[in-house]
Length: 191
Image 1 (cartoon, one colour):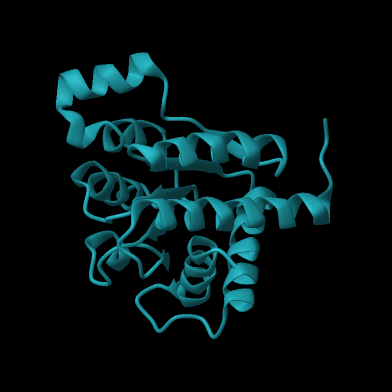
Image 2: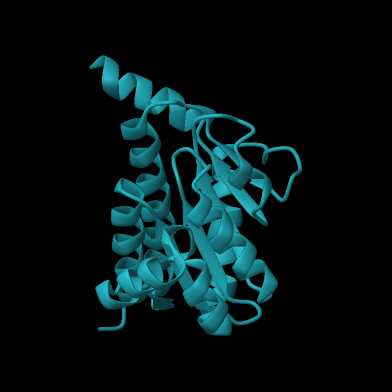
């Protein structure tokens, strides 16, 4: 087997899915099922889902905004409109491009999915704080250092113990895709 794929599988097997600041779930399958249940609750309640990230993680967030809406049948909302993003960056600063819109849009019981390889970006940390102030739940997807700030902030925290962007981003994307595919397989797709 090619070394890259072998390493990728190794990091998937070491990925931690943590509820709050507790110990990781027992195994990958249990953690995935817990995540599927969490997203299913939000689907059934009709709450809004916000996916955010920077760089490669923003591409994952944008992709998942579409997939969770179309394939998962969920009420997703994109924070990536160019006019809104550039307005927030210009008027408030880049560190507030997500938190300012969330302070207007987020409602109690909504869900913010914050995706960041490093878990250290100020705009992501501010967004998590803004979502929590509005009563929204937060799931973080991080990597790199085990003590990264975002990993300490979510109601659920998925952590990939790897310092390579490509590996961390691939695993984040894979797991989010698995979650929406599990929901789609269970519920079907309404087109």
